[in-house]
Length: 65
Length: 316
Image: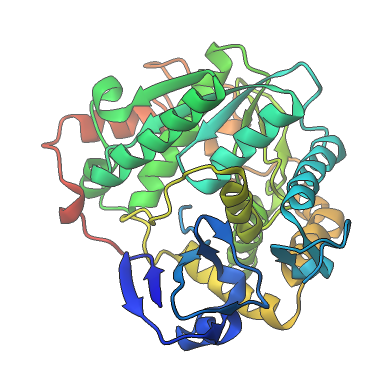
């Protein structure tokens, strides 16, 4: 599946199906610090993502003072 | 995952409340948290005019949307900071939101209206860009609110922001800053009331709110703020939160309930160094502790300098 990552914006390929938890672990991301989005909708944390999914992992932490 | 309220399929988990929500009940939860915060800290009365400081990021657009939904007369103010493409794009998100909602929006361009931009100010003063940026925003939001007769300035600071600032202030025992870290600062000495209605909601909840409400916002990080201390403190707190959900909320709200009064002994100065004085800037008339306020000093210094593009500013 295609996974869009941000900061900087880039796309990577990941083999599916894969659970949201495993996907986040693969990128060493904390679930507190990102949202998983598919077709403009939020993906619940207990979902399994199929291989043909296009996913965005969107960071939610902003650093401005 | 099922919604705590209706038992339908849930889309968001809020671990610190041990709750999952469907889209409708999550949006309702956000509105209720904001209404509760507005009441709890006497932030605003129905019918008051609010000026929302909007950046184009998720928090400021979410707080603006929430206040409009609740029924407040909430006008936006966007400041073009001149941070290259990042600022151009951020401005587009703000204008698109205002247009879609039919909401009133004021705009100030730092370069066109005050003769400088944030990258140039950072280069000239040789300080971290966030310092010149924060100083400029505070000054311009405050003066716009006072001149426009608004009852309060609203900012989109969320629970993560406030917990991270508190963490930084505690690490250094910044007693003056700790004394003034409250979600509502009353008006006084020529300063407007300042309120932070999102302090009961996390950063992740605000991003989820925007996705569910279909609000497009600037997702990319400000190129000048990357890797700053604030972001680093948030990471540290999130490591704790992951093992101990609710830690951030307990840290911040525990401080408000049992800590801040111990620091606020009546003569603290805090983030707005000018707030404790009754002098006026001889250039712009804003409250100031010196003859010329810190914003006018910055504008004088940076305004005479050759513009510096964002790529050439050294980050620290």
